Length: 157
Ligand SMILES: CC(C)(COP(=O)(O)OP(=O)(O)OC[C@H]1O[C@@H](n2cnc3c(N)ncnc32)[C@H](O)[C@@H]1OP(=O)(O)O)[C@@H](O)C(=O)NCCC(=O)NCCS
Image (tube, rainbow, N blue to C red):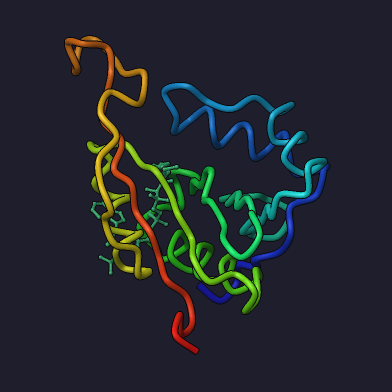
């Protein structure tokens, strides 16, 4: 994917980021929430094809750890390695001071769980009935979250 560039998200990117989010999420973040993430100092990255934002990643650093809050690739650009490249680079940009990363993901989200495993995350547990969900698919209107963690560097160094 030589023409794609991964860089920090700018306030001018948030409309395109929110447009991607609306395409992929059942309960999408608003543009204002993405602006809030930038203002709060969260580590927000985008992958771009020229002027077009084609994906984003939001990491929240907490001391020597980070939480992956959200990431997505525009459906037209999925399956080309953009998601794994974006996540690996976003984690690398956190630097060596970040020793662990955590995330929660819908149990039904096989593509994302496979991506996270490919990047090195492991399942830690399940949070029951965590996400609001479509009642046509989940009768309870809720879906479990899978909790995953990644250890970076040598934790015993
Ligand atoms: C999850 C997501 C970010 C993956 O992005 P992507 O650019 O398509 O992923 P990549 O092309 O880099 O694929 C990396 C790995 O992810 C997994 N993967 C990606 N798409 C998959 C699919 N449709 N089915 C199963 N595994 C898939 C594979 O393990 C793949 O590795 P491989 O190509 O060696 O098999 C993308 O599908 C997406 O934006 N989904 C909607 C939003 C979302 O679910 N975000 C995560 C929760 S916050």
